[in-house]
Image (cartoon, rainbow, N blue to C red; front, side, top):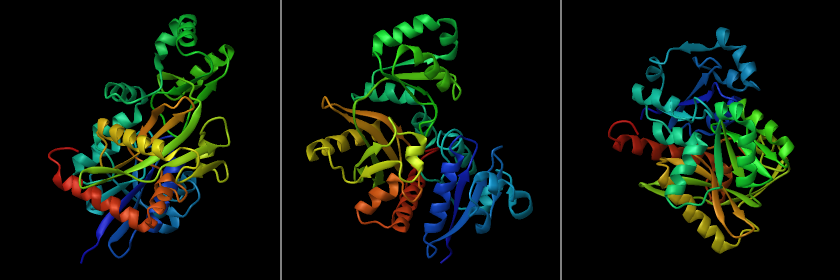
Length: 351
């Protein structure tokens, strides 16, 4: 039987391109060769696509890979992608990757892919829109304000006063559209509020300012089976830093994770899973997703960061929670591919 050519798209144009490379490399290594033929597709920093051999995939960084492209890789146009692959495993992260952009391209090319469709992926990147939808659905989210760049520049003192009176100190500033905790600051006093907002504005033209949450952070992978979202095991997170930073997420030894949780009571775990499924459905996610949040000291459960995709590095929540259910990496990857293929076979129009 002819194998399905699975294009593993990695790299990209976002701040998370190194994370994407680690995800893509791991998917490539663990793809079931009995069922699928892996095709490594590298997106460079300009958005160009290249078919790359394993000896280039194994390079350490996206910069290392880029240095080999002209001599050792095959450059293709977007239109040529459907001649190279039958299915796309999206390992891109961040802007232009899991925000609806690559999904829209794949829809036009009629190539089925992992993860959510265009709209849900775009919402999955926009923290402000997420909160509006979740709040309207009766799901707990942090109190927050959105500060556009022009408002900040023209009414700085008024904005500072509104934030401090409305949220208190400490509070959290973050870009409205960015992943991997890029541009996030915990503002501990009024004097550092300006810096926190300015740091967030380096990544986007609006800032989401949230209440500070005191509690246990959690993450839950959701896998869709027969149109029904199923939560995998919950993970309890204890970062080394004061919040779950980029280094805590991706550097070995920077974070302690417990799957299943050690300090969240079993009844609360079940409550969290119910809220996770509500959030998954409210945001229109498909195939799979990762829903993050907090169990607060006052007993509240808040959803803080719903993601329409997930990192796929060996130590990621995706594989850790799959292992808790008895699934090896190759098994969960195959299941995700088949779930996604079924969803695309049954869709009418774009996903």
